[in-house]
Length: 337
Ligand SMILES: NC(=O)c1ccc[n+]([C@@H]2O[C@H](COP(=O)([O-])OP(=O)(O)OC[C@H]3O[C@@H](n4cnc5c(N)ncnc54)[C@H](OP(=O)(O)O)[C@@H]3O)[C@@H](O)[C@H]2O)c1
Image 1: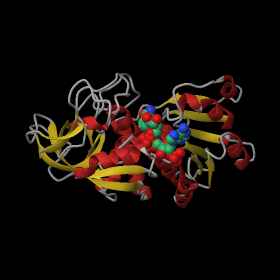
Image 2 (image 1 turned 120 degrees about the horizontal axis):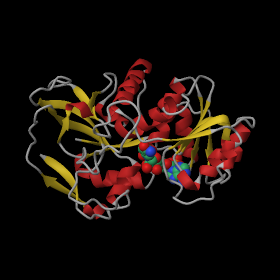
Image 3 (image 1 turned 180 degrees about the horizontal axis):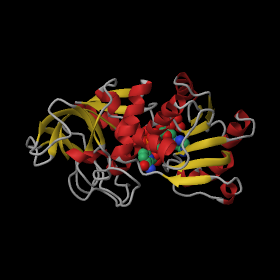
Image 4 (image 1 turned 90 degrees about the vertical axis):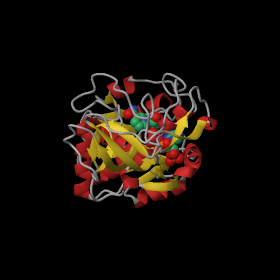
């Protein structure tokens, strides 16, 4: 079967090479998935450049955590799926339900990922995908979609109708959060580097956007837009570089879902601002299989269509990585097989 491998020790896209491996056969309780679509996350850029936690990959590794396809074969004792079922792998293999109690291994690093014709997973690390969405749309869910769902619906207080949700940026996590928050009856405000991207977020249902390039003090704009009240939920993709602004913009009792580090690893953080508002901050680690299944039910019931912006064929996988690294997209970049 055809695959891509990130070569051991890789620190740039030059380390991403086409390769072949034998067609996999399922062991007991394993299933083989014929991957139809796979999507990129910011994490995948960090892995390719050797900047992910733990440094460069320590062996030749199939990249990407997110993929969707159909079951091609099942091993002995498999009861959860049958050949032909439409499925996706879970980001963390082994986290079934309940709170995170250990750091489970993830697809794409340290485990082999989804940029391959076939992948083999334990049946417990697989979910059925919503019938009403395509493989491309389903490939956006395992990491970005589930992170947004966990941040809004599971960890800390859940979003409720009338809340204001602030999403930092217009990438995979933010746009999924926008879609879930709208389905829950909330108002959504986005920040972005681009007026054009803000327009696209507004078409999806955002009420307003703030261009953080033109308004470096974007928190003041968001406070103005909310009549000084602030946001009840903040999808905090910036990390240390934006946290103090997120504390400033949080409403009383607001929740800051700590997700990413796009604004850099360092910053002058003042936690007292959040404390004085009885606010809360919660760390998000993608999510469990049970959360993934809950999210999929919500997607089906609400007919949510995850936003796939750019689609590349398998042979142009490197171009997909370049597109994502350049920030030249809203929502998700997908590779089809
Ligand atoms: N904790 C977890 O479980 C978890 C899970 C998934 C992702 N993450 C992290 O969450 C972050 C977002 O991931 P993703 O996959 O959604 O990324 P992505 O799809 O690559 O989206 C990145 C987008 O964020 C915006 N951005 C860039 N720099 C920014 C900044 N300084 N401040 C605000 N926005 C900025 C840009 O959009 P605009 O041009 O519109 O600004 C960019 O297109 C990353 O740090 C990722 O590592 C964490």
